[in-house]
View 1 (tube, rainbow, N blue to C red):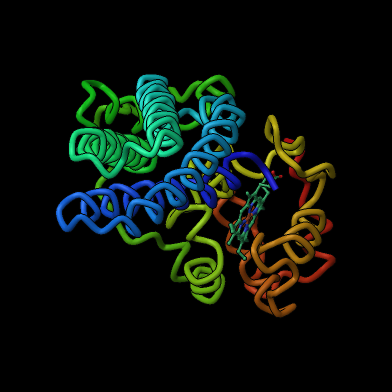
View 2: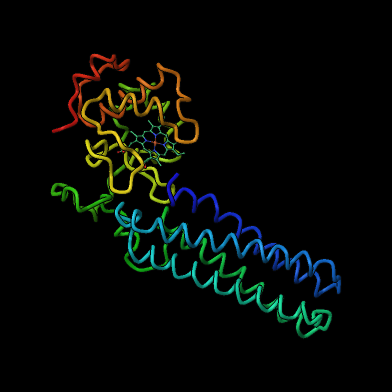
Length: 289
Ligand code: HEC
């Protein structure tokens, strides 16, 4: 499991816990219900631990994201907000612990103070989440230039694109390959697109690398990949996908589906394959070119 995947799983905990903690403190304050303060405190503590794990996993994942071509500004904004959120939740937690141990929380002033801090923390969680969203959907970013950067091909250091002006968004046309390899395309939409993107271009935040387009299916694994084997021939891809994909259900594809979806990926790379992709066909394809 890679760090960006872990980050994605873990971030939902601070998002939920810190927000509900703020709600509990506010309810406790408005109604004078002391039980809710304890609930808020426990949720706050759990949320702060989760935020710490999310920040660590996020920091570990950021190089990989940058290598995938995600805008550095967007990554920085998300990371900085994440650190601020962690700081705020630690301050709120420390304040709560200090006041609770001195038994001062029944007084209106201290209780209101903790509630305000918790609400600010929850707001910060929301802003952090928004910037996290801009990593996946750069078009919604308020940062100038982020959308334009993310439109460029991922991993620009590999092969500079000459024939494509990134400023002109490609019109979405029906791809003939999707008709010829309709069954593979269908498997892809259902089983793979969630992590590798609808057009196989990769989804940075989820950690699914590009599997279509010129950068995809390289002989050597992408930087930081867990993949160890090389993709010398189409057969290597067929075996790899059959054994390890979909990542959340490795080996979950029927043999036939595996052949169809890999045929679709190889056809996209310009190889002449049939929809059923036999072992012989796959072995004859050399990716080393
Ligand atoms: C739950 C997310 C997820 C799903 C679903 C998924 N993948 Fe992946 N896939 C990944 C991740 C993450 C990697 C990178 C693994 C690594 O670090 O080597 C990957 C790697 C790959 C690679 C190797 C790319 C390379 O250059 O190393 C191929 C090919 C691939 N997936 C194909 C598929 C196909 C085909 C499907 C659908 C049948 C699929 N994946 C479904 C997450 C997923």
